[in-house]
Length: 163
View (spheres, rainbow, N blue to C red):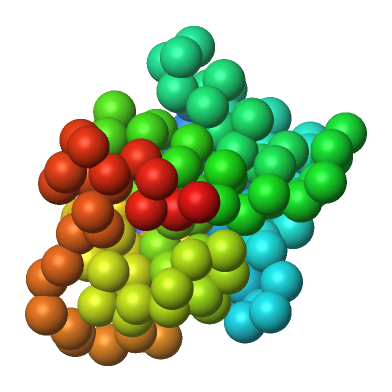
């Protein structure tokens, strides 16, 4: 006689999640459980969590994210939110969801650049539309706004807009 699984008689046997599924679930937990940015401070994510998030990016984008994070947090240097914003914007232009999300948080908080909730909402919508859970949660904070991209994504001659 076949051994019965513990549980309901009509339940299907549970499949073990794949390794990729486990990594994705872990990253989702990190994003959802991360506290929102304070309005006067930069996002201060744990370096170990960041390395997991950044590992999924292309090498050039990963380098931009690591440098931006270091500038935002002041790791090994003075805090430089304008420099962090420029780097996040460059990574966002390559399609990095994490960069779009972090740049959106900076615009929302007005940290290192002029506060612009419409730009923040647009960045959150783009990142959320491509699967970023943290951005999806931030849309609830910003609400529906007009669509407006930051100048660094629309005008290549405006790198100094953030300095």
